[in-house]
Image (cartoon, rainbow, N blue to C red):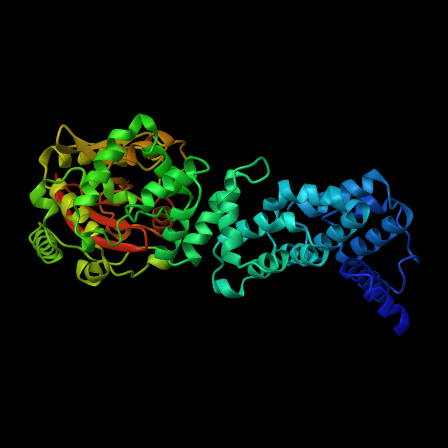
Amino acid sequence: MDEAAWHEAANMGPVVMQRITFIAACVGLLGGCVAGELGDPIAVMTDHQAGYNKRRAAAIQAESQFPQDPKRIAALEKILWMPRYPAWQRCYAVDQLVVHDEQAFRRSLLHRFNLLRDVKTINHIFNLAIDRKWRELTPIAVQNYAQYVHGVADKDRTERRVITQLNPGRTVEDVIFDIFCIQDSVTSTKDRIAAWELLFRLVAHESLIGRLMNAPDTDPLVTDLKAAASLHLLPSNREELLWLLYIRDPQRQSFWRSSVDIVRRLQPEQRQGLALRHLPVLATLSTDQLALGRKILVEQIDATIHNGSSFMAGPTYDGQMERWPQRFSHWRQSMCWADLIAIDWLLSAMHDRRVVAEIFRQADADHQDIGTEYGGVVSVVDGRPAVKGYEPMYRQHDRKFIPPQEMIEHLYQAVAHYHFHAQKHKNSRYAGPGDGDIKLANRLQFNFLVFTFIDRDRLNVDYYQPGRVVIDLGTVRR
């Protein structure tokens, strides 16, 4: 290709340019694609067993000989949306589908974008969106932006550039907030929840509360978030949003009203860091307990842990949790007042002999059952702490408990979730939460306990919460 032709192609935009580059690469690699024509190039395009060069040649031959063939278009769709195809092939499929029917491709993106996983293809589509002004991809960019990417700062994310360039003259945060507030047939609940998660991450909480309080009461999602924001309770993710909608349901208004009454009685320093997971704990407290200050709570927790029958603050056992700090002294300064009151309450519950007896009964059953871990809920029944076990949603293996929806809904008005590491009686190596447990805590946002057999008559108790906080509470005896 001479220089004039190259510049002419460049002026035609990135789709044509990539197509020409792709053809040139084929010619360079194969010494010309025509020399060895394939009997069925469309079939070869999608053949995982065929080498890359052969698939490239097949794609060019099919494009030349069968440009409008429905089978070729179906093959391009398969390459783009099905797993195991490389980025170069997916990007080629994107360009070809745009050339074939851009409007149909744009409609398809709105429904299937979440099937894409490789970053190169996603960025290629975003670049096309910017070049061709596909403004309807803004919610998709927001959804992608809401997903945390390790090692990439929010200000450097491709999605931020996409949102900015598709919505000139507006701030990224304003665009995201508008998506959150919209209730129509185009903007899905998933779009709105992703927008909220992203706002929680990008916008200072006081500023976000201000934006929220000025938003119109368009639907229950906005109304319920306003109610929570008035107490400085801001759900951080999808799971907490569902939690808020559940406890704000008119059928459960008594719990919400009592929670509001308690929170409004707290001092300003007691409200700092308050989250939905603290509300069930607060509902159990007496007036004297609500008046306890940080200093007294820290002293009580220290004394209870160190006066226990045993204190094991050894390392946890896998992934990023290996050798993770578990001593209360490491975490206490970073914990809010409500965290401390929750730990104090749980330590008291672990001294209730009826509770301990039930925990051991469930631990023994878990020890005998090699098909699943066991788990349940710590709550208050008739004014006393109680534990209730749940069957897993389904059984996977002996080192995993998969909570059923019924248990999740119970936790919305309960103190903590617990599970067991009871595969054998001498199981101290697996004391404490694993990396998967910590990820679940960050997603579900509850308070958590894990009970691990140290020997037949002792269970180690570890508390953990969102933010990768792990505290060894000692042991309980049979």
